[in-house]
Length: 284
Image (cartoon, rainbow, N blue to C red; front, side, top):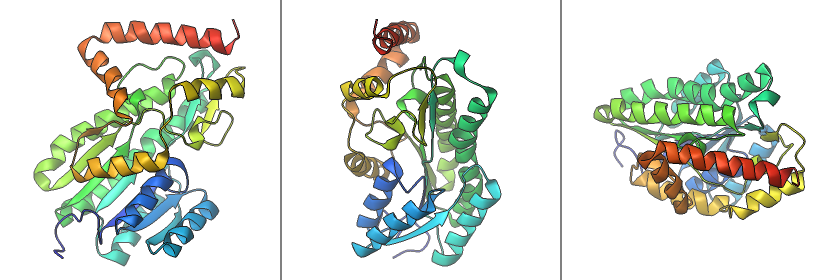
């Protein structure tokens, strides 16, 4: 198999940040099923090791590495170690992310900093570590996880929405810059996926303010969360097609189209939805 071309996906090398749980775990498992050598990069190292072990037991190739995506030297070391071991880097999935929701009046500056550090700086660190290596190879595909929050307004989730808009802008801009160099860039904008990030009070999803967890869960269920495994399957099919902006479940594209066609209408609808949500959560 040619050494200087992107492999889709058999015999490729892929790094997945946040690979121990949720979307990252599902992506890692699907990549391994398709023949990738997968590196699960996560702070939850014991869980990452468990997932990697399960992948190997199923006949795949996987390694778990403890990495904090907000630490550039650690990300840089991870990328270089992976390339030294495998001789290449086909895919980097910048997937690690967290949510801190609630009204801006409930935020402390530490909440802004934490979400920006993980959701934006984590992606920047991954790009900075991998992009030059991919340029030197003449191939590679960077896949950044944003959110539908990166394509529409997000009242009640402003800091998360801020970072995801930035990830979309980073990705589409870098895609245009990198294309002539043989490097692909895609951004994935999930709707609601059934992952631990939906759990209020968890490690990855926190709602500031006095909102009952059960009521929050009920509201998420109304949006019919997609299973992460189905999401990962559809995502990798879209990555193989080199799609620029990837949205699943597909019906969420409706909101993207509304935002593109009439930003003022989209903001009005978001405002109405937010007020309705607050009334439901407050039991009014």
